Image 1 (cartoon, one colour):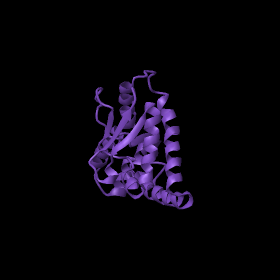
Image 2: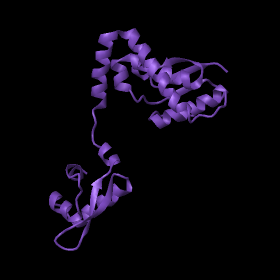
Image 3: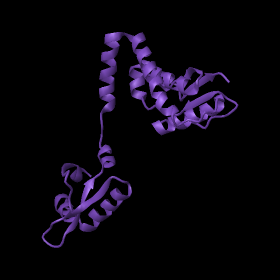
Image 4: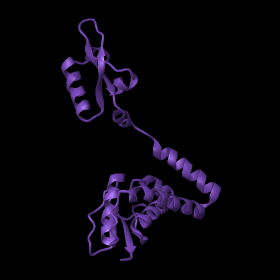
Length: 196
């Protein structure tokens, strides 16, 4: 994949063989796997010394597979905001941001006013965001996440949990308490809702 990242215009199988120093079979097998996973695609035909060959390029999804350092940037940004506005104001702003983010998710939600339905839809929306949530028990008013998509950031900046709370309360239309938190050393994040 790194060879395709370096050559944005793409490479033929022959060019990849030469660049990587491996067999045509190895290149073909690797390209087949990358195509299957949506990480590379054929982007036309390129001239070679013989007949024309397919040119392979890295897809946008393939480019995203390379390491990113978003958490490092987010940590710097959170530290700057905390220093400028203080913990309480930072928490308020993050909660407000979560409330706004819930608006986009609510467009896909049903109009069912029952809390059990809203919590099941919230858990599903959270899974789409990257959380591993348990199925919601209709007799309970808890949403349980087994991972935190902001874990390292939340450990360093506990105010980040206000974003989740704002998003969840707005989505569910109910008050929410963060009764367990992985950033506080517990095994899950458990959010308990009040309402009907």
